[in-house]
Image 1 (cartoon, rainbow, N blue to C red):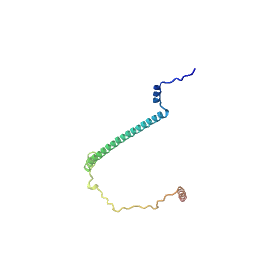
Image 2: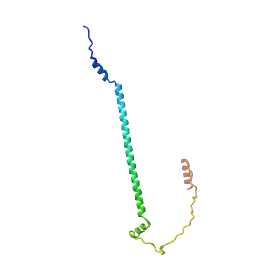
Image 3: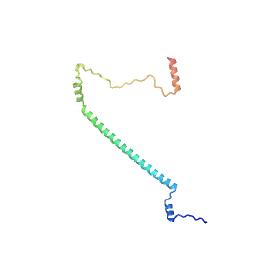
Image 4: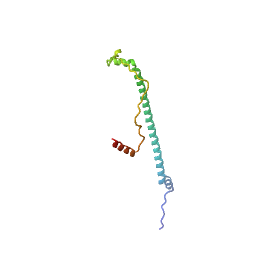
Length: 139
């Protein structure tokens, strides 16, 4: 008896060849999609960070504008007349009489005092220790 090989119909073989995937192709496709996904995720994170930075910058600018407005209000509100009114009304202060005013004359020249010893230059640790013991012996 001769053995006959069982043959698959050719249509099945053709379909089998079309849909057979090898391991390298699958790995390459997975690697491609993983790279594309990581790239998209990176761009999404960058976009989110830029959005937060822009929001923070807008908030900082808003606070700067508010501070400028408040400084203008303070400058406008506290003039010398307003300060005098507050001192008199709230604090009960009064202007001094002529007998209470003492005039002090200050010379226009500026005098400065010189140190008797010049400042030491940068010393090493060893020089500092030696000078400490020399000063201790002198004492």
